[in-house]
Image (cartoon, rainbow, N blue to C red):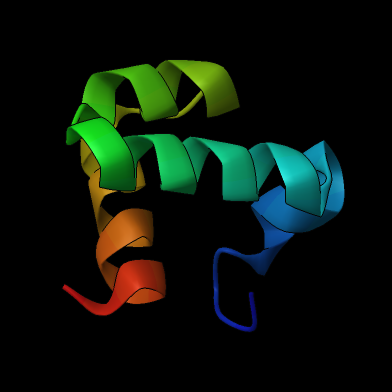
Length: 54
Protein backbone atom coordinates (compact mmCIF):
# COMPACT_ATOMS: atom_id res chain seq x y z
CA UNK A 1 0.00 0.00 0.00
CA UNK A 2 1.44 3.26 -1.05
CA UNK A 3 -1.25 5.80 -0.24
CA UNK A 4 -2.70 7.83 2.61
CA UNK A 5 -3.90 4.61 4.28
CA UNK A 6 -0.38 3.24 4.50
CA UNK A 7 -0.53 4.27 8.15
CA UNK A 8 -2.86 1.34 8.83
CA UNK A 9 -0.38 -1.00 7.23
CA UNK A 10 2.40 0.35 9.45
CA UNK A 11 0.34 0.12 12.63
CA UNK A 12 -1.46 -3.18 12.04
CA UNK A 13 1.00 -4.93 9.80
CA UNK A 14 0.52 -5.58 6.12
CA UNK A 15 -0.94 -9.05 6.58
CA UNK A 16 -3.90 -7.82 8.63
CA UNK A 17 -4.77 -5.14 6.10
CA UNK A 18 -4.34 -7.51 3.17
CA UNK A 19 -6.42 -10.18 4.89
CA UNK A 20 -9.28 -7.75 5.54
CA UNK A 21 -9.17 -6.49 1.95
CA UNK A 22 -9.15 -10.00 0.49
CA UNK A 23 -12.04 -11.09 2.71
CA UNK A 24 -14.09 -8.08 1.63
CA UNK A 25 -13.24 -8.82 -1.99
CA UNK A 26 -14.51 -12.41 -1.58
CA UNK A 27 -17.77 -11.76 0.23
CA UNK A 28 -18.42 -8.03 -0.24
CA UNK A 29 -18.86 -7.51 3.50
CA UNK A 30 -17.30 -4.13 4.28
CA UNK A 31 -18.45 -4.20 7.91
CA UNK A 32 -16.40 -7.31 8.67
CA UNK A 33 -13.23 -5.81 7.21
CA UNK A 34 -13.80 -2.56 9.07
CA UNK A 35 -14.23 -4.45 12.34
CA UNK A 36 -11.01 -6.41 11.79
CA UNK A 37 -9.05 -3.18 11.34
CA UNK A 38 -10.91 -1.09 13.90
CA UNK A 39 -12.14 1.36 11.28
CA UNK A 40 -15.51 2.81 10.40
CA UNK A 41 -17.27 1.14 7.50
CA UNK A 42 -17.00 4.27 5.35
CA UNK A 43 -13.24 4.54 5.98
CA UNK A 44 -12.77 0.87 5.14
CA UNK A 45 -14.86 1.24 2.00
CA UNK A 46 -12.63 4.13 0.87
CA UNK A 47 -9.52 2.05 1.61
CA UNK A 48 -11.01 -0.89 -0.29
CA UNK A 49 -11.91 1.22 -3.31
CA UNK A 50 -8.41 2.73 -3.47
CA UNK A 51 -6.60 -0.57 -3.06
CA UNK A 52 -8.81 -2.83 -5.18
CA UNK A 53 -9.54 -0.16 -7.76
CA UNK A 54 -13.31 -0.33 -7.77
